[in-house]
Length: 302
Ligand code: MN
Ligand code: MN
Image (cartoon, rainbow, N blue to C red; front, side, top):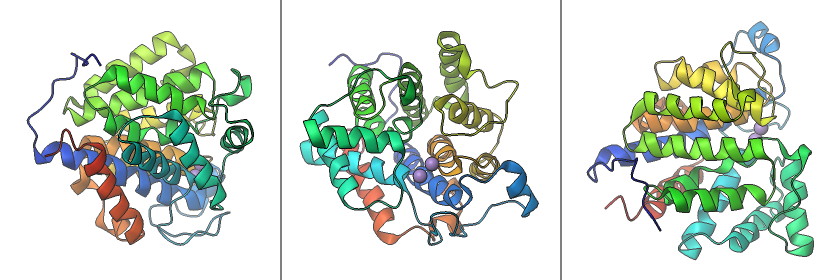
């Protein structure tokens, strides 16, 4: 596979491990923080005094710190990669089917439809579909981004195949690729400016994603999700402020929280994630994330 020459690989330092772990734990923490206020409006959340603690509750009646489909699907895709020793769309689909059989606490409609299609006829994608513009493929891209760090061609191939298992839509594809590539740049220590360049490229190709001026919508439509994520990621100075401001927009708060938590964790590193939030994550979730980061990046983290 050709290596991506635009990423300058840093020495195999603790830094990159801290960013990779920050990204995965940031994803989980953003998911768990946002999930109790999923589907509330920004006004309703503000009226309650805002949301910045792992309260649990919400429409899914969650335990404090409980993750949802965003983190779960990421973990299942990470397992597929680790067990296979690389990318295999069929085995990744098997893992998502496994997940669906384990009565997940929440499943998006498009994800359910795609996984059920695979379970019924074994196909790895449906037809391109106007209705597939949700954020379900983008929110689970992290394990693939970690595993393909330094190899953009391998990333692009696996990212698109994983996306099309459930979502076959040009805007979902564009967002999924952009997010994974932002993670690569952040892991490489290239910071926010490199991500801004990618965001601008996305907007040139698909002007729908323009996030300034910020329209204030945070729904599960990938355009709204990306606008909310980019607006807050590029207009905050630390992990906590970034994730709190994002989830307080409500609507698909667990998913915007998960995605922005992934980016902010990759930028600021794991030590920037508030300990009071990490403490609320399930021990089993936290240890699987730690295991997956090491296993997915075993060529890089030595
Ligand atoms: Mn969710
Ligand atoms: Mn969601």
